[in-house]
Image (cartoon, rainbow, N blue to C red; front, side, top):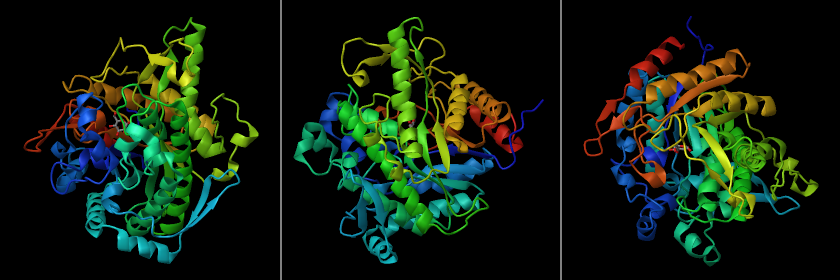
Length: 485
Ligand code: BGC
């Protein structure tokens, strides 16, 4: 019996601007990520691979072919893509003065823009870049791909974040990225401007991609692989908090400035993308591992959603929300949860007596492992979908799910087995999953790991930019075309 998905289910792939755009056409060289991967110290101590985004798949120029392929080869009806903040605003937007209201605890709470402010932003924006994004979105629509647009998928303009100065001495610079509340204000301007300019083409928005990964890999890591490469639990929490507030202010802007219905979905459906992984104790009989696994689940899966949905900002992360940690006025809305799911992590307590955020590690993958050494565990997807829906009661899109598999041994099985779990969530658990986006359309720049890691449904030749289908392409095509497994 075919497993049929609900009518109107969105089938797509996800890509992100910095990872996919470069390789042909104008580079995006005005962002913290650009500075980060090109920094000689970072390369020499192997924080980053030394690969350059300039060898990427070149979506900036080749988008029409890629989108056609998504439609004609994959029979998809949607695509998730992102804008690059540094392309749209290579120069500061600080001078566009807007009304910022703070709460009693001095947190940015509301950012208010008038028509004149949006016009002023338009004078600062790079029109070639905005026009190119319009062309890309129009091409998606032309091919019948409903665009899901992510406003922030990691790089931020250098005028807001100098990751090298922050890495070396964060007190030496004002450009502190998400540690500084001014980034929240500028993000509200970006959200207002983009939804005003692109709203006639877009109805589905993701505000922030994975607050936890940005905070963890930037501020809580021994390797220091993401900008600014620090290892400080308090900065991890500040970053996470500000990204959750940023979701709220961006949510309000999109609702205010996008009044166009580009599709039957209505003018704007706006969600947060959370990365939700399956955690379990490395040794289930060890109470410390069990405690740590629960703690990591709380810190990494739950914290950001509790903040966005309940206004719970548990800043000392003791799993008790004190009155001063409750910011219900920061709850602005979240129409859906975007779930990025990849793998299972078996958590071990290191027992060094350090802060718990510094006192865990993951046991090595020992079963079905991807090229990244991630533990393939399809059942975990159903678990996190059920958990997220039971707890927060919003429709869900699986906004990313995929496998690093350069040998093309795992992808087809990964895709099918994870979709089987999505099917079960919908039909057995009653979770309203509305769409699925495979990560990713074609091989791209995998952040600090460069090109070694290949998630693409299409392999990309770095020289010629030729796309070659992996074995999963005909499989995904059949699933999307028949709307069934
Ligand atoms: C990110 C992607 C990334 C993928 C695989 C997700 O965390 O959103 O940008 O490439 O995981 O690592």
